[in-house]
Length: 253
Image (cartoon, rainbow, N blue to C red):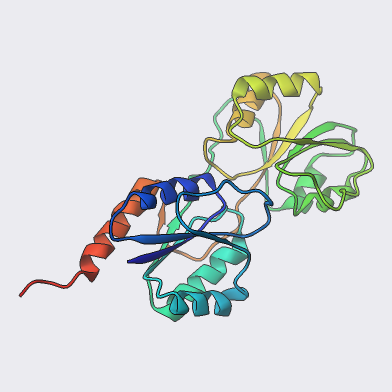
């Protein structure tokens, strides 16, 4: 059985490791190509786009893929939409592997917003020191609020340089401990954190640190997706794949 995993997340890498040790299943992990030096998986991989839903469907058919796994980032809205369309076109099962949402506790001070423009507006007019941890694609939304200082964390150097008048970029790849995040927020005199509700453990330290320090968090909601079954554990996806593999095996007379 052949499986294509649309990846770029820690969960996709964990699933790839499970696939590497599984007899009878040939897996391929696909990276979007935005990160220049992704962690090399234990199974064959490819990097770059497919050319939309039609291109992905053509790839699925050409490579005789039996199951498609969407393990992309929860905010990879377009890729997830293409996965739904391509799997339907190729007439193969689609499994979604996604992190559960972070949920606020009573002591948290979250300002929940729908998108990055709303997040920039939620910072208010008074000058603040903002910890910006949203990836690199939507940073320009904060040019609308130039009065703030932005400490931007990214995996790789940002190209082109963000057009934020007052900012500094620091590089880092999770997981981040709560102790390290608290230390960073104190040293940089951070007033507010802006982040996406990505879920997962690797970057949850910033949420705990904000909670411990009493800092507000501007939390950007996940994009709405079409109704579909979602699994949160790579082991659950592996169980689904094994069940589907057994269904594909010829039955003895």
